[in-house]
Length: 44
Length: 231
Image 1 (cartoon, helix red, strand yellow):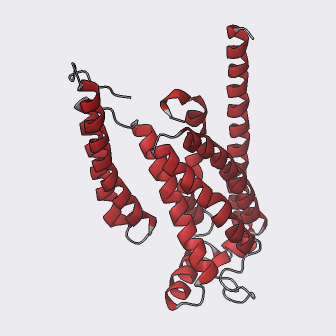
Image 2: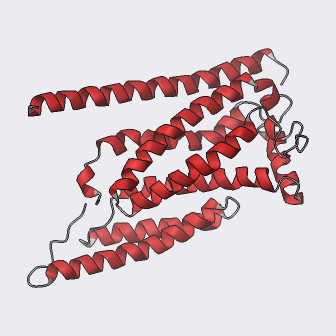
Image 3: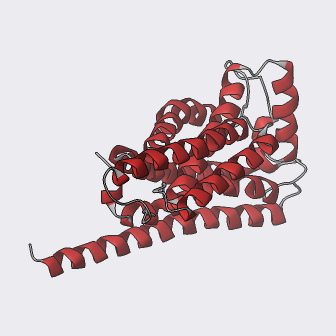
């Protein structure tokens, strides 16, 4: 495997990892927003 | 890593290594003591200055030219140990000591303020403790599987072992799955968790956001030069 293709693969892996992390943190943030919405419509 | 430039000549390298190890050990004694106290939750305020003293000793030794553990590794390692200890102590008390007076006061008090899951039907299930749907399953599965493994991984990382770095990556991803699931559970059973408590929603988030953020270390763990960790 050539050096350039390895680094290209590495870059793709890193990008995929960052995207995956963003998805997970977005979900966690989403749960917070849903909870705030539920709070606004309930008598908690 | 910082390297010594002053020592040279015959035996210089060995002397440098011995001095570096001694300085690292001295700093670690302070940081371990601080971490043990902070991991007990209530003694956290006593542990924090001890921990900072260790950090200061480590940075002074590095400035003096000794080879010390990278600061980022030190912070991630000890943060993970404290995170695992705090989660384990709280949940272990809820699991095994739910009928003690101190737990009935502190845990339900916490529940009444931040998380109704620790107040609602407390000690009414056959197992006792928190009665929130799913909570007991999280406790039983995560204390032995996640937090024990995470603590071992963090110790390995602090010892600059390759397996420590690898296992911290594994347990960080496990932690992401856990928070993904736990927060979903909190949202689905929001009526149980947040109904008629003192600080609904934002109180829990303000307290727990610090437990969620350690996974931000994943990009570092994935991209750090693995050669700094030994086999």
